[in-house]
Image (cartoon, rainbow, N blue to C red; front, top):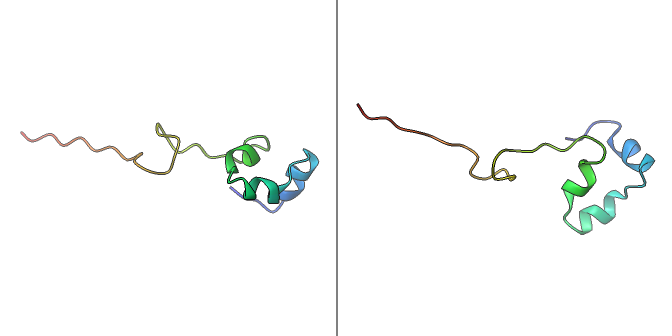
Length: 56
């Protein structure tokens, strides 16, 4: 998630947004500042929806 103070909090921890973006490392950027969202068992936003169909 990105909040109005995200860049400020990241800079306080010496996190350079441009470098993390260049390395495709959003986890490494957002985890230290507490803004990381973990999506589910796959740790991605793909295939975290499960359906069980019970046919009587």
